[in-house]
Image 1 (cartoon, helix red, strand yellow):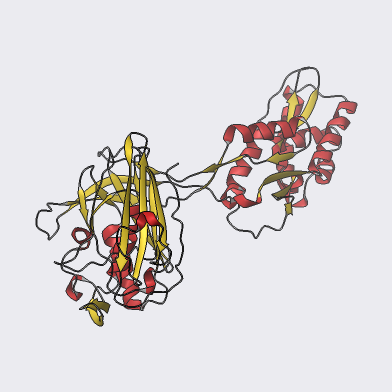
Image 2 (cartoon, rainbow, N blue to C red):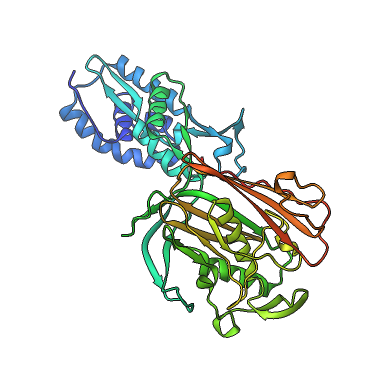
Length: 446
């Protein structure tokens, strides 16, 4: 038998139907909305059939058309773990899997003729099935994505002894999710066709979003070192504006070289005034007085940065807690807050890691979050607390503790260094809740 290869499966289906009755057979094999398209193909097929193809026997034609008809009445079933979906709105679910049922009668182009030299058969084209998966199903999967750095900018700052501040221009959203295991999925498609089950499991792998550095500055292997969080629910609109401005305009993208000391005020500027774009909200003065001031709420950002620096094991050079117990700082590290005031009080810490670190800051809803990225050097950081004077363990009682103090202990271990331990004590002028608000900092170092 003459071996033939034709490009389009629908053309071949039409060709197979010619010997059994032309358009009437085609109409019975495909949806009515495709009949006109098939009729046009048959006109061309008749010429090919008459000139270059040895006719099949009537028996072979019947077998082919029976197989085609059976395929067109079946479904291909894709399945993926429910937890991999972007949302939970898919109706078809089965034993922990999301199910997509695809009628083959809607996709006759997936069927193609197969000449194996002994006889002619029909089969499904795996490449077309894979293209359908990529274009119609994968967008429903919660796929991971990467952020990219294309350029580094230098900013002059209005502080003595600080020449410039490096900031990365970060593009795209970094998102943990899933990625398609191409090899395994292609194998699953092949097996589903070979064993005639037509049930295809979409092979997915858990995937963490990464930072891809395409700039000229070698910042090493940028991996997540720590996360600092804070909650500013209940803030006025002006305070929210200041928090977002500090986090997104001034902190996000800051780069700190190894051995370099970062100054929070160098990032936001010493001129926190209305004419520099800040709004007026309440701040603390003289220990206990609340007064309107430009930039009120900036300390939400400094507190969030402080918590991230602590969790990364960075060396804290300068920090002071607020004089009053502020409920905005109760969650995600009660007692670990950092006040700042231009020209007087700063938050400063040193990058004691072997490579550059990058600060990524964002605000989502009422949540502020700072992530520290850099190169892992094997250190482990544990933040134990918060304690009160009546329940603090002996190892943190370096002196007599007062009722208005909140105590934490930071332990840093490293494979090549001696363990370090330091006690962090925040004292407030007003009363504090007797029952601590516990929070366990996330270990992201593994």
